[in-house]
Image (cartoon, rainbow over all chains, first blue to last red; front, top):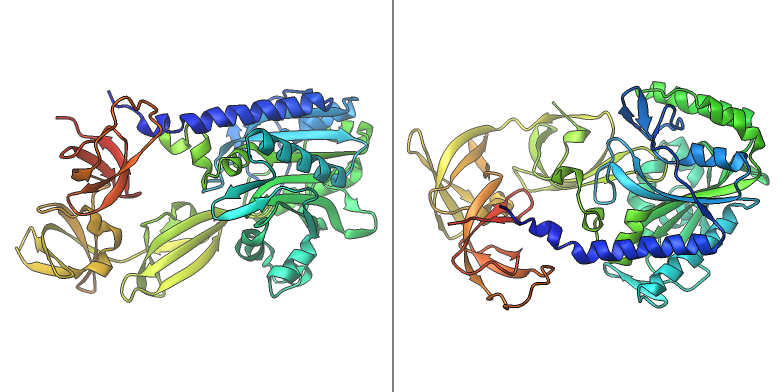
Length: 307
Length: 187
């Protein structure tokens, strides 16, 4: 008989995690959101260049509930949220686990700026319930949660933290390396920060900004150098969405990756989807930050290596 | 041949002809972007530290090192002495070259000594080693929280966190890949 001491040690963290999930649920229910469950196993994940689905017989485990949730919007559901497991092949590190928990929510007649406001209220209120008041300590950082949180464009982030402009970084094919190596570690050190308006090529399901179609209406939220959430004003034009998917599929061919079937039913129903905004938040990472842990492994009962 | 998926702390690869050991590794994936494998590596010959970021699809040659099974004998100043099991030849390796592995060297432990062009530059220790606790505070009886840990010193002088129920003179198993407590050895 071996006592799993590592697991026993996690008792407090797992209890706090359950508390956080309960408060998040309350937040959305009180905000008039309907909790939904969509299938975890689907025939056609959204074709995205760098997100790899885990096969499950001839179907796949979903990489996010995005397409099914948008079908609900198209059918007339107006405010929906879901807390579910998602799978992404090959993603493992301090902040990554191939099976993780996602909080995803959608709102019709809203844009990405509305979701920034909602993120602020959600995270701040959960932090306060946990006893953080208006600031939290994460690793060596003191992070103020006072609203409003800083909002800067991706272009501004490149100018601020790297020797390159965003355009140069794209041309030199250094966008991801600079983002991961130079920009991300600087984001959200004194307070959470939204970085918004990603290059049009980096948001396959996001609407382009009407005033500047070179960028998409997409943002990411960072706290303490950790990417916490990704949001869009959703693309609702089926023809445009179809051609973006084709483009992503072609990228996957070039990268030597498996190409997923076209999500045809989603595309057929998309014309009925009203203007909407949606966001995916990594729940494990939120728990990790609120409880001041450096690794995602500390806030889940079992890592894949422990199974 | 290794791929980026094989990268982990302790992996030994060849770069520009020299053997390097990965001393820190992290996976990064900026939102919707590609997977990046960020490593810090130490040149096993001259100690130079390199930061390198790799993308999916890149490959590495294993470090071309000769391995010889030897027995750890003793430490003198900063040199650790080993004896070849086959020809009884003795060699010494400097403390710096051993890195964390020095924490697990107890008399008579069998290790694989790594040689590059005939020169000993490090050792591989088993993934798990048993070491005796020589110093730790007693367990406060009645504390059943199970959530605490305490420091303990093992016979090599290495200090690590152990569960509160571990007592002095007990034998514990340590995972040498992480340096962390694994289990208590019964009996």
